[in-house]
Image (tube, rainbow, N blue to C red; front, side, top):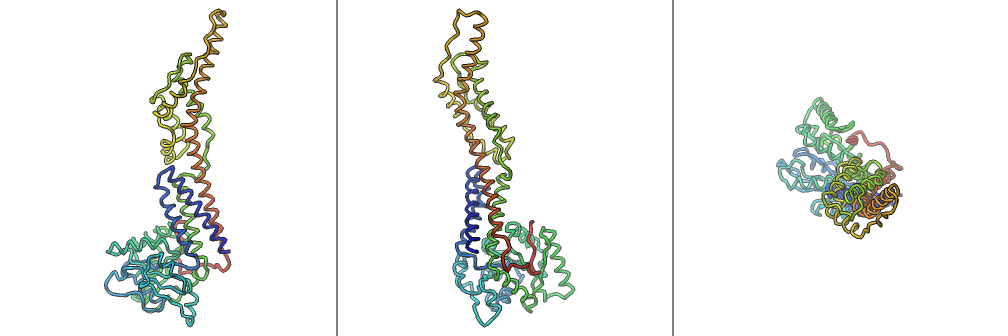
Length: 449
Protein backbone atom coordinates (compact mmCIF):
# COMPACT_ATOMS: atom_id res chain seq x y z
CA UNK A 1 0.00 0.00 0.00
CA UNK A 2 2.82 2.43 0.84
CA UNK A 3 4.27 1.86 -2.64
CA UNK A 4 0.94 2.91 -4.14
CA UNK A 5 0.82 6.01 -1.96
CA UNK A 6 4.37 6.94 -2.89
CA UNK A 7 3.52 6.49 -6.58
CA UNK A 8 0.44 8.69 -6.16
CA UNK A 9 2.53 11.32 -4.42
CA UNK A 10 5.14 11.25 -7.18
CA UNK A 11 2.38 11.81 -9.72
CA UNK A 12 1.09 14.77 -7.72
CA UNK A 13 4.58 16.27 -7.51
CA UNK A 14 4.94 15.87 -11.29
CA UNK A 15 1.66 17.80 -11.69
CA UNK A 16 2.94 20.51 -9.36
CA UNK A 17 6.12 20.80 -11.42
CA UNK A 18 4.14 21.06 -14.68
CA UNK A 19 1.93 23.75 -13.21
CA UNK A 20 5.01 25.64 -12.02
CA UNK A 21 6.55 25.47 -15.49
CA UNK A 22 3.38 26.86 -17.08
CA UNK A 23 3.17 29.60 -14.48
CA UNK A 24 6.80 30.55 -15.07
CA UNK A 25 6.19 30.72 -18.82
CA UNK A 26 3.24 33.05 -18.45
CA UNK A 27 3.88 35.00 -15.24
CA UNK A 28 7.65 34.85 -14.88
CA UNK A 29 9.73 32.88 -12.37
CA UNK A 30 8.51 34.69 -9.23
CA UNK A 31 5.21 32.93 -8.52
CA UNK A 32 6.50 29.58 -9.74
CA UNK A 33 9.87 29.48 -7.99
CA UNK A 34 8.49 28.38 -4.61
CA UNK A 35 6.43 25.58 -6.16
CA UNK A 36 9.35 24.42 -8.27
CA UNK A 37 11.72 24.43 -5.28
CA UNK A 38 9.16 22.50 -3.23
CA UNK A 39 8.71 19.90 -5.97
CA UNK A 40 12.47 19.42 -6.24
CA UNK A 41 12.95 19.10 -2.48
CA UNK A 42 10.06 16.66 -2.12
CA UNK A 43 11.39 14.51 -4.94
CA UNK A 44 14.82 14.40 -3.32
CA UNK A 45 13.22 13.28 -0.08
CA UNK A 46 11.06 10.62 -1.73
CA UNK A 47 14.10 9.23 -3.51
CA UNK A 48 15.54 8.43 -0.08
CA UNK A 49 12.40 6.68 1.13
CA UNK A 50 9.70 7.42 3.68
CA UNK A 51 10.59 4.82 6.28
CA UNK A 52 12.41 7.34 8.46
CA UNK A 53 11.03 10.29 10.38
CA UNK A 54 13.13 13.46 10.52
CA UNK A 55 12.44 15.41 13.71
CA UNK A 56 14.25 18.60 14.65
CA UNK A 57 14.73 20.52 17.88
CA UNK A 58 14.37 24.26 17.24
CA UNK A 59 14.78 27.00 19.80
CA UNK A 60 16.71 30.06 20.85
CA UNK A 61 19.97 30.44 22.68
CA UNK A 62 19.89 29.02 26.19
CA UNK A 63 16.68 27.02 25.67
CA UNK A 64 18.50 23.75 26.35
CA UNK A 65 17.98 21.98 23.03
CA UNK A 66 21.25 20.08 23.26
CA UNK A 67 20.53 18.99 26.82
CA UNK A 68 17.10 17.84 25.68
CA UNK A 69 18.61 15.83 22.81
CA UNK A 70 20.92 14.11 25.27
CA UNK A 71 18.03 13.43 27.65
CA UNK A 72 15.84 11.93 24.91
CA UNK A 73 18.71 9.82 23.58
CA UNK A 74 19.94 8.98 27.11
CA UNK A 75 23.47 9.70 25.93
CA UNK A 76 25.87 12.62 26.44
CA UNK A 77 26.47 13.39 22.77
CA UNK A 78 25.48 16.99 21.99
CA UNK A 79 27.82 19.63 23.40
CA UNK A 80 26.57 21.53 26.44
CA UNK A 81 28.30 24.66 27.67
CA UNK A 82 27.67 27.90 29.49
CA UNK A 83 29.07 29.70 26.46
CA UNK A 84 26.31 30.60 23.98
CA UNK A 85 25.51 29.64 21.34
CA UNK A 86 26.78 26.11 21.95
CA UNK A 87 25.32 24.40 18.87
CA UNK A 88 27.29 25.73 15.91
CA UNK A 89 26.27 22.90 13.59
CA UNK A 90 23.45 20.41 13.34
CA UNK A 91 23.91 17.31 15.51
CA UNK A 92 21.75 14.22 15.24
CA UNK A 93 20.89 11.02 17.04
CA UNK A 94 19.65 8.16 14.88
CA UNK A 95 17.69 5.18 16.12
CA UNK A 96 18.38 2.10 14.02
CA UNK A 97 20.29 1.67 10.75
CA UNK A 98 19.71 2.95 7.24
CA UNK A 99 19.82 6.71 7.83
CA UNK A 100 23.08 7.47 6.04
CA UNK A 101 21.43 8.77 2.86
CA UNK A 102 19.19 11.07 4.88
CA UNK A 103 22.04 12.49 6.93
CA UNK A 104 24.09 13.10 3.80
CA UNK A 105 21.09 14.90 2.26
CA UNK A 106 20.71 16.99 5.42
CA UNK A 107 24.39 17.85 5.27
CA UNK A 108 25.19 16.34 8.66
CA UNK A 109 28.70 14.89 8.64
CA UNK A 110 29.61 11.57 10.25
CA UNK A 111 31.31 13.34 13.12
CA UNK A 112 28.01 15.07 13.99
CA UNK A 113 25.68 12.12 14.49
CA UNK A 114 25.47 9.05 16.67
CA UNK A 115 23.43 5.87 16.33
CA UNK A 116 21.27 4.20 18.98
CA UNK A 117 20.59 0.57 18.11
CA UNK A 118 20.64 -1.46 21.31
CA UNK A 119 18.34 -4.47 21.32
CA UNK A 120 18.45 -4.50 25.12
CA UNK A 121 16.57 -1.25 25.57
CA UNK A 122 12.86 -1.36 24.82
CA UNK A 123 12.41 2.32 23.97
CA UNK A 124 15.28 2.17 21.47
CA UNK A 125 13.42 -0.47 19.49
CA UNK A 126 10.27 1.65 19.60
CA UNK A 127 12.11 4.59 18.08
CA UNK A 128 13.86 2.78 15.23
CA UNK A 129 13.64 4.98 12.14
CA UNK A 130 13.81 8.30 14.01
CA UNK A 131 16.40 10.92 13.08
CA UNK A 132 16.42 13.59 15.78
CA UNK A 133 18.38 16.72 14.83
CA UNK A 134 19.50 19.49 17.16
CA UNK A 135 19.46 22.63 15.01
CA UNK A 136 21.63 25.68 15.67
CA UNK A 137 19.83 28.50 17.48
CA UNK A 138 17.47 30.50 15.27
CA UNK A 139 18.56 33.69 17.07
CA UNK A 140 22.29 33.02 16.98
CA UNK A 141 24.56 36.02 16.59
CA UNK A 142 26.51 33.99 14.04
CA UNK A 143 24.91 34.24 10.60
CA UNK A 144 26.18 30.82 9.53
CA UNK A 145 24.26 29.19 12.38
CA UNK A 146 20.97 30.76 11.29
CA UNK A 147 21.62 29.70 7.70
CA UNK A 148 21.91 26.06 8.79
CA UNK A 149 18.72 26.28 10.86
CA UNK A 150 16.80 27.95 8.02
CA UNK A 151 17.96 25.31 5.53
CA UNK A 152 17.07 22.28 7.63
CA UNK A 153 13.81 23.42 9.23
CA UNK A 154 11.72 23.02 6.01
CA UNK A 155 13.04 19.46 5.56
CA UNK A 156 11.71 18.19 8.89
CA UNK A 157 8.70 15.89 9.20
CA UNK A 158 8.16 16.92 12.81
CA UNK A 159 9.39 19.91 14.84
CA UNK A 160 9.95 20.13 18.57
CA UNK A 161 9.86 23.83 19.43
CA UNK A 162 11.88 24.40 22.62
CA UNK A 163 11.26 27.43 24.83
CA UNK A 164 12.56 28.21 28.29
CA UNK A 165 11.17 30.15 31.28
CA UNK A 166 13.43 33.13 30.61
CA UNK A 167 12.71 33.64 26.89
CA UNK A 168 9.37 31.91 26.37
CA UNK A 169 7.74 35.22 25.35
CA UNK A 170 10.26 35.86 22.55
CA UNK A 171 8.10 37.01 19.58
CA UNK A 172 10.77 35.80 17.16
CA UNK A 173 10.17 32.21 18.30
CA UNK A 174 6.41 32.56 18.07
CA UNK A 175 6.43 34.10 14.60
CA UNK A 176 8.93 31.51 13.36
CA UNK A 177 6.76 28.72 14.76
CA UNK A 178 3.53 30.03 13.29
CA UNK A 179 5.03 30.87 9.90
CA UNK A 180 6.60 27.42 9.65
CA UNK A 181 3.34 25.77 10.65
CA UNK A 182 1.43 27.68 7.98
CA UNK A 183 4.03 26.86 5.33
CA UNK A 184 3.88 23.16 6.28
CA UNK A 185 0.28 22.58 7.42
CA UNK A 186 0.62 18.79 7.49
CA UNK A 187 3.69 18.77 9.70
CA UNK A 188 3.29 17.96 13.38
CA UNK A 189 4.55 20.52 15.90
CA UNK A 190 5.40 19.75 19.50
CA UNK A 191 5.86 22.74 21.82
CA UNK A 192 7.82 22.16 25.02
CA UNK A 193 8.77 24.47 27.85
CA UNK A 194 12.19 23.20 28.93
CA UNK A 195 14.08 23.91 32.18
CA UNK A 196 10.84 23.79 34.12
CA UNK A 197 12.91 22.74 37.15
CA UNK A 198 14.27 26.29 37.40
CA UNK A 199 10.91 27.74 38.52
CA UNK A 200 8.39 26.81 41.18
CA UNK A 201 5.25 24.80 40.46
CA UNK A 202 2.98 27.86 40.53
CA UNK A 203 5.24 29.84 38.23
CA UNK A 204 5.55 26.83 35.90
CA UNK A 205 1.80 26.68 35.50
CA UNK A 206 1.53 30.43 34.89
CA UNK A 207 4.35 30.44 32.34
CA UNK A 208 2.87 27.45 30.50
CA UNK A 209 -0.51 29.15 30.35
CA UNK A 210 1.05 32.41 29.20
CA UNK A 211 3.03 30.71 26.42
CA UNK A 212 -0.12 28.92 25.27
CA UNK A 213 -2.02 32.21 25.12
CA UNK A 214 0.79 33.92 23.22
CA UNK A 215 0.74 31.16 20.59
CA UNK A 216 -3.02 31.52 20.23
CA UNK A 217 -2.60 35.25 19.69
CA UNK A 218 0.02 34.53 17.04
CA UNK A 219 -2.46 32.38 15.11
CA UNK A 220 -2.11 28.82 16.34
CA UNK A 221 -5.21 26.73 16.93
CA UNK A 222 -5.55 25.04 20.33
CA UNK A 223 -1.82 24.71 21.09
CA UNK A 224 -0.79 22.58 24.03
CA UNK A 225 2.53 23.24 25.73
CA UNK A 226 4.32 20.40 27.55
CA UNK A 227 6.57 21.25 30.48
CA UNK A 228 9.84 19.27 30.58
CA UNK A 229 13.20 19.32 32.26
CA UNK A 230 16.19 17.86 30.49
CA UNK A 231 18.08 18.11 33.79
CA UNK A 232 15.68 16.20 36.04
CA UNK A 233 13.99 14.13 33.35
CA UNK A 234 10.52 15.50 34.10
CA UNK A 235 8.31 15.11 31.01
CA UNK A 236 11.11 13.60 28.93
CA UNK A 237 9.64 10.09 28.92
CA UNK A 238 6.30 11.38 27.62
CA UNK A 239 8.09 13.39 24.92
CA UNK A 240 10.15 10.35 23.95
CA UNK A 241 6.99 8.25 23.73
CA UNK A 242 5.32 10.77 21.44
CA UNK A 243 8.32 10.83 19.14
CA UNK A 244 8.25 7.03 19.12
CA UNK A 245 4.53 7.03 18.29
CA UNK A 246 5.02 9.26 15.26
CA UNK A 247 7.94 7.17 14.10
CA UNK A 248 6.09 3.89 14.55
CA UNK A 249 3.25 4.98 12.26
CA UNK A 250 5.61 4.97 9.25
CA UNK A 251 3.31 7.50 7.59
CA UNK A 252 4.49 10.69 9.28
CA UNK A 253 6.96 11.56 6.53
CA UNK A 254 4.63 10.54 3.72
CA UNK A 255 1.78 12.67 4.99
CA UNK A 256 4.02 15.65 5.63
CA UNK A 257 5.31 15.43 2.06
CA UNK A 258 1.75 15.11 0.76
CA UNK A 259 0.59 18.13 2.77
CA UNK A 260 3.53 20.21 1.55
CA UNK A 261 2.68 19.24 -2.03
CA UNK A 262 -0.95 20.27 -1.60
CA UNK A 263 -0.02 23.53 0.15
CA UNK A 264 2.44 24.47 -2.61
CA UNK A 265 -0.17 23.67 -5.26
CA UNK A 266 -2.77 25.81 -3.51
CA UNK A 267 -0.37 28.72 -3.13
CA UNK A 268 0.50 28.48 -6.82
CA UNK A 269 -3.18 28.39 -7.75
CA UNK A 270 -3.83 31.46 -5.62
CA UNK A 271 -0.84 33.34 -7.02
CA UNK A 272 -1.78 32.43 -10.57
CA UNK A 273 -5.41 33.35 -9.87
CA UNK A 274 -6.46 30.06 -11.42
CA UNK A 275 -9.10 29.10 -8.90
CA UNK A 276 -12.03 29.51 -11.31
CA UNK A 277 -12.66 28.21 -14.85
CA UNK A 278 -11.57 30.46 -17.69
CA UNK A 279 -14.26 32.09 -19.84
CA UNK A 280 -13.37 32.12 -23.56
CA UNK A 281 -16.83 32.84 -24.95
CA UNK A 282 -15.96 36.50 -25.57
CA UNK A 283 -13.12 35.74 -27.99
CA UNK A 284 -15.36 35.46 -31.06
CA UNK A 285 -17.08 38.79 -30.50
CA UNK A 286 -13.80 40.50 -29.64
CA UNK A 287 -12.19 39.14 -32.81
CA UNK A 288 -15.10 40.36 -34.95
CA UNK A 289 -14.90 43.80 -33.35
CA UNK A 290 -11.14 44.00 -34.00
CA UNK A 291 -11.62 42.98 -37.64
CA UNK A 292 -14.34 45.61 -38.14
CA UNK A 293 -12.21 48.31 -36.56
CA UNK A 294 -9.15 47.52 -38.69
CA UNK A 295 -11.27 47.21 -41.83
CA UNK A 296 -12.83 50.60 -41.17
CA UNK A 297 -9.34 52.08 -40.90
CA UNK A 298 -8.33 50.38 -44.17
CA UNK A 299 -11.44 51.34 -46.15
CA UNK A 300 -13.17 54.27 -44.40
CA UNK A 301 -16.92 54.33 -44.95
CA UNK A 302 -16.66 51.25 -47.13
CA UNK A 303 -15.06 53.38 -49.86
CA UNK A 304 -14.05 51.23 -52.81
CA UNK A 305 -10.46 52.14 -53.41
CA UNK A 306 -7.17 50.35 -52.83
CA UNK A 307 -6.96 49.50 -49.15
CA UNK A 308 -4.75 51.66 -46.97
CA UNK A 309 -3.30 49.26 -44.41
CA UNK A 310 -3.55 50.57 -40.84
CA UNK A 311 -0.29 51.72 -39.36
CA UNK A 312 1.10 50.98 -35.91
CA UNK A 313 -1.00 53.73 -34.34
CA UNK A 314 -4.28 52.24 -35.59
CA UNK A 315 -3.11 48.74 -34.66
CA UNK A 316 -2.21 49.97 -31.19
CA UNK A 317 -5.70 51.34 -30.70
CA UNK A 318 -7.16 47.93 -31.53
CA UNK A 319 -4.74 45.99 -29.32
CA UNK A 320 -5.36 48.33 -26.41
CA UNK A 321 -9.10 47.75 -26.76
CA UNK A 322 -8.47 44.01 -27.03
CA UNK A 323 -6.33 43.96 -23.89
CA UNK A 324 -8.91 46.03 -22.01
CA UNK A 325 -11.62 43.52 -22.87
CA UNK A 326 -9.39 40.61 -21.87
CA UNK A 327 -8.11 42.09 -18.62
CA UNK A 328 -11.66 42.96 -17.61
CA UNK A 329 -12.14 39.20 -17.34
CA UNK A 330 -8.69 38.33 -15.99
CA UNK A 331 -6.86 39.15 -12.74
CA UNK A 332 -3.89 41.47 -12.97
CA UNK A 333 -1.04 38.97 -13.39
CA UNK A 334 -2.75 37.43 -16.39
CA UNK A 335 -3.68 40.79 -17.85
CA UNK A 336 -0.01 41.74 -17.81
CA UNK A 337 0.90 38.40 -19.35
CA UNK A 338 -1.51 39.11 -22.19
CA UNK A 339 0.47 42.20 -23.17
CA UNK A 340 3.42 39.91 -23.90
CA UNK A 341 1.32 37.26 -25.60
CA UNK A 342 -0.40 39.27 -28.33
CA UNK A 343 1.50 40.71 -31.28
CA UNK A 344 3.06 44.15 -31.12
CA UNK A 345 1.29 46.96 -33.01
CA UNK A 346 4.24 47.26 -35.40
CA UNK A 347 4.13 43.54 -36.16
CA UNK A 348 0.37 43.62 -36.69
CA UNK A 349 0.70 46.60 -39.03
CA UNK A 350 3.33 44.78 -41.09
CA UNK A 351 1.13 41.67 -41.35
CA UNK A 352 -1.88 43.77 -42.37
CA UNK A 353 0.09 45.43 -45.13
CA UNK A 354 1.12 42.04 -46.51
CA UNK A 355 -2.44 40.70 -46.25
CA UNK A 356 -4.10 43.67 -47.96
CA UNK A 357 -1.56 44.27 -50.72
CA UNK A 358 -2.81 41.46 -53.06
CA UNK A 359 -6.47 42.49 -52.86
CA UNK A 360 -8.07 43.47 -56.16
CA UNK A 361 -10.95 45.93 -56.38
CA UNK A 362 -14.29 44.48 -57.46
CA UNK A 363 -15.39 45.37 -61.03
CA UNK A 364 -16.84 48.88 -61.37
CA UNK A 365 -20.58 49.40 -61.72
CA UNK A 366 -21.76 49.76 -65.33
CA UNK A 367 -22.72 53.28 -66.32
CA UNK A 368 -25.82 52.41 -68.44
CA UNK A 369 -27.98 51.21 -65.56
CA UNK A 370 -30.86 53.23 -64.30
CA UNK A 371 -30.07 55.43 -61.35
CA UNK A 372 -31.83 53.19 -58.79
CA UNK A 373 -30.17 50.03 -60.11
CA UNK A 374 -26.81 51.76 -60.18
CA UNK A 375 -27.09 52.76 -56.52
CA UNK A 376 -27.93 49.21 -55.48
CA UNK A 377 -25.03 47.85 -57.51
CA UNK A 378 -22.67 50.38 -55.95
CA UNK A 379 -23.87 49.38 -52.48
CA UNK A 380 -23.27 45.73 -53.28
CA UNK A 381 -19.81 46.61 -54.59
CA UNK A 382 -18.97 48.45 -51.39
CA UNK A 383 -20.26 45.55 -49.28
CA UNK A 384 -18.24 43.11 -51.35
CA UNK A 385 -15.13 45.22 -50.95
CA UNK A 386 -15.65 45.53 -47.18
CA UNK A 387 -16.09 41.75 -46.96
CA UNK A 388 -12.85 41.20 -48.92
CA UNK A 389 -10.96 43.58 -46.65
CA UNK A 390 -12.35 41.95 -43.52
CA UNK A 391 -11.60 38.48 -44.89
CA UNK A 392 -7.99 39.49 -45.46
CA UNK A 393 -7.68 41.06 -42.02
CA UNK A 394 -9.35 38.21 -40.09
CA UNK A 395 -6.39 35.76 -40.33
CA UNK A 396 -4.05 38.49 -39.06
CA UNK A 397 -6.29 39.12 -36.05
CA UNK A 398 -6.55 35.38 -35.50
CA UNK A 399 -2.77 34.83 -35.56
CA UNK A 400 -1.72 37.89 -33.58
CA UNK A 401 -4.53 38.24 -31.05
CA UNK A 402 -7.04 35.38 -30.93
CA UNK A 403 -4.70 32.40 -30.89
CA UNK A 404 -2.14 33.89 -28.45
CA UNK A 405 -4.97 34.89 -26.11
CA UNK A 406 -6.64 31.48 -26.40
CA UNK A 407 -3.32 29.78 -25.66
CA UNK A 408 -2.82 32.01 -22.62
CA UNK A 409 -6.30 31.21 -21.33
CA UNK A 410 -5.73 27.50 -21.97
CA UNK A 411 -2.53 27.59 -19.93
CA UNK A 412 -4.34 29.35 -17.10
CA UNK A 413 -7.06 26.70 -17.21
CA UNK A 414 -4.41 23.97 -17.30
CA UNK A 415 -2.81 25.37 -14.15
CA UNK A 416 -6.22 25.34 -12.49
CA UNK A 417 -6.75 21.71 -13.52
CA UNK A 418 -3.27 20.62 -12.50
CA UNK A 419 -3.31 22.25 -9.07
CA UNK A 420 -6.80 20.91 -8.43
CA UNK A 421 -5.68 17.42 -9.40
CA UNK A 422 -2.63 17.69 -7.12
CA UNK A 423 -4.78 18.59 -4.12
CA UNK A 424 -7.19 15.74 -4.90
CA UNK A 425 -4.38 13.22 -5.34
CA UNK A 426 -2.62 14.00 -2.08
CA UNK A 427 -5.91 13.78 -0.19
CA UNK A 428 -5.71 10.03 -0.78
CA UNK A 429 -2.19 9.92 0.62
CA UNK A 430 -3.22 11.92 3.68
CA UNK A 431 -6.24 9.75 4.49
CA UNK A 432 -5.93 7.99 7.87
CA UNK A 433 -4.59 4.47 7.72
CA UNK A 434 -4.40 1.50 10.08
CA UNK A 435 -2.69 2.28 13.34
CA UNK A 436 -3.18 6.00 13.14
CA UNK A 437 -4.50 7.27 16.41
CA UNK A 438 -5.06 10.65 17.93
CA UNK A 439 -2.00 12.79 18.62
CA UNK A 440 -0.69 12.99 22.15
CA UNK A 441 -1.74 15.94 24.25
CA UNK A 442 1.74 17.40 24.26
CA UNK A 443 1.33 18.29 20.57
CA UNK A 444 0.45 21.71 19.22
CA UNK A 445 -2.43 21.66 16.79
CA UNK A 446 -1.75 22.61 13.17
CA UNK A 447 -1.60 26.35 12.61
CA UNK A 448 -3.09 28.47 9.92
CA UNK A 449 -6.19 26.39 9.18
